[in-house]
Image 1 (cartoon, rainbow, N blue to C red):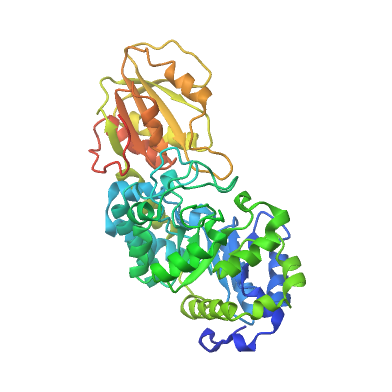
Image 2: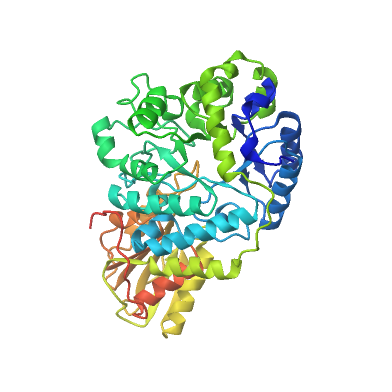
Length: 505
């Protein structure tokens, strides 16, 4: 086990270990061989660290402590925690999507979320947060950023993103802001294909780059580039991950960023797939990436490339200096951390979910009886349970619950409530309402009774169904969100949040 990361120097590295510092493979606890593979990557190769998927709090904590104990160098352990540790690690706290914080616009609440996230991560041995999302979601049909963004307003994203990054780093966790120079205007999911943004540099400076400039001013230490092509920045059409003009000319020279650049996952199809991975790793490092995240075959790459003179280039030495400095600051490793109050933290997450509820149109229920349409998607049981609990407390009767493609006879004495959940998921375009669902919902437009739409996750589907009398938007699929919707509809809760994106009425 290393004694003091502050005295660690790249001069002590053999060629294979030098090359390995540029790679951060995955540990996926749903893969039974993943832990053994991680131990081998630490012992035999001395990789930079790992990105963590799945597992529970205790298993992740046990594994990171074991890997630290056998590593001769500090290790980064990164995790996608835009919504808190519970986004990837069961037992951790799961917050609503970032747009909930945009709706509340309360810096104290956001600092609280960042502190909880950092302390839960540190308890598990994790020290690199792949958050905040600094994308400005200017495209309502964005299938992968969408509700993961704080807002479509660059000023609000700048303020909240800067607060989150600054707070989590003060707690001793490295913040990695994503996805530079901006993924918010795309119509494609970069997990599945290479998106293209045609904005000019001037337009990007106005609409997409302000949040990164703000975070850099607040001493952000790490940035993740987008697997997105920006022709105005790179005429050759290279995605930002592989573009020297984006990473060196724009990020480092123009914006003055001198921290780490960590790539997005190399398992995403935007970069061309497995057959191009090796050349893409070298291209990314040559363009200005310091650490390549989530390669498919790290062992094979290092066995073939470790002695490559490419890794002796002075530019690689600059990258190593940045890596070692960031590890000195954040990868202390092995210290005892008190167990967080997971139950209390979950309560704070539920309160954020409730506070974030936004009334887009309309108000309270007109009657005391409802019929609820839902779509049987994952998470809908939690939503519906919370919704029914909230209605029951105010003596509102749920007359029926039905699901597509049922066509029940609706009575105008019973309000029609449509529960629509649309959340970003890689490779699914799940934020986009499928035509068959849109047609089904539209079939109720002629109903003459009260019509209510509740959106959970993305609020943008509200624009597709202008015939609803009342629209309430919430930003996750939890029981707390369902309950908050019922409390607003029954007048128990007066909403104070404001929708942080523009939606056509």
